[in-house]
Image (tube, rainbow, N blue to C red; front, side, top):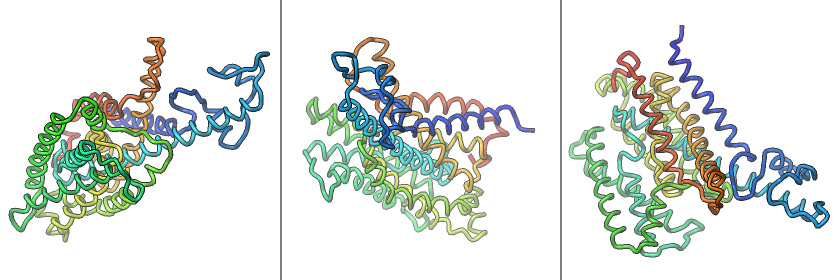
Length: 381
């Protein structure tokens, strides 16, 4: 017989999946121009909206006699298609890719380092990427190279450079251990944080605001191009991590036992760290550092699936994507609700996604932590 707590957790994950499906619907969300479910799907198939339905929509331009002309209907259909699919669906797809990547990398690092507080940013990839982006902003490197913003490239290579230095300093002996990687990653991350404070101190107010705003994370996108740009970096990492799941299960039981069963521990560590680093660096470069996804989702999935990596990693992919879609939906809806309450137009402002993931992630993590008992906790953690 299943425990009531286990049933409630499964119910919570089911509700999260439903929320993800709702978030992927082009009719859901809050924008300056409202487009509902029916109009978004009608526009997708070039079907004009019902004229009587349009009369009830806000901000609809009517003729003097109260009728809607054909030009207005054509304009509305174009707006519905642009808002419903080019904007909302593209934004949800980006959230799905980013959330899945951060959650799967976080789960891998928590298993790899045997530390429930490990995140995709533990080795300093976020700090290095943020420092690279800040330096690009500070020195006005806003050009594009091969269609990619130079700031994005600086963030990507900044994250990779820090992790490369982590490997250099951690490899004090021929045997690379997870403790050495953790210590080197935390130390270099603190150094990058100090350098970021120095860059902010040397910047003017406008630039400082831009730097701080970038650090909050963003899923702003107009088309699905950003999600497509991420796939060559993150999709191979997903496949590598899922293929490494059986070896990670053996690794969880201890280095010596894993070695006795034919697992090449150092090789496994390097492969997983490199795959996670490339994927996380790409995410940070495109969206900035988005926190708590890589910390909360693996704990939630591990609570349900008992840290069997063959199930945990695919589950983290799905739950992580759904979690970030729901958070993005809340970020879009919050400002519209605030505007309705204050009766003021807030110029289409959307809460930074990093703020919402923290507001949602912290209570979720504390609830999961409070419900962990000695019997439910993983023996190695």
